[in-house]
Length: 193
Image (cartoon, rainbow, N blue to C red):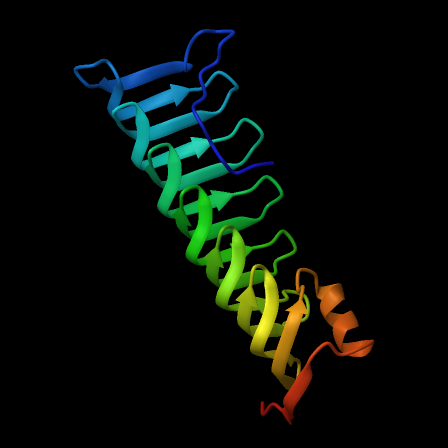
């Protein structure tokens, strides 16, 4: 499911759906209002010259929900997106994409707290595996571990350079350590309790 929401013109019905709320002198949606869109999605919040702009809540017919800031019908600013699979993103949005700082909680309880660019983990961030408590803290490039970072498991810390490692699932992380190394650790140290 996409997390993009749009008030598309429905040619079959010849409308933008049902709307109750404020309008400007030109008859455009302007101010506070509530819309039921042709495909069953709803939006309640601020409009400016016919576009979602300001604070509002968009509920998708299939269960997703976005609560936050809008600009020109796009998620833009701070907001929280609840996905139908139980995952959640809370943070910064730019032009309908996760961008800037944000926290993503995955359906299995794993979290990523860090920087985003074009909907992907990019920059400094920490990925925490819920089940094991293991963490990768370091640099991400377009969704993958890269450059300098550290991987912390129970009572061991691995520091070194990571190269293009995809860390999306805990099982991949375990395979990376037990089967072969794609990085050369600078140091392996025990953690004090």
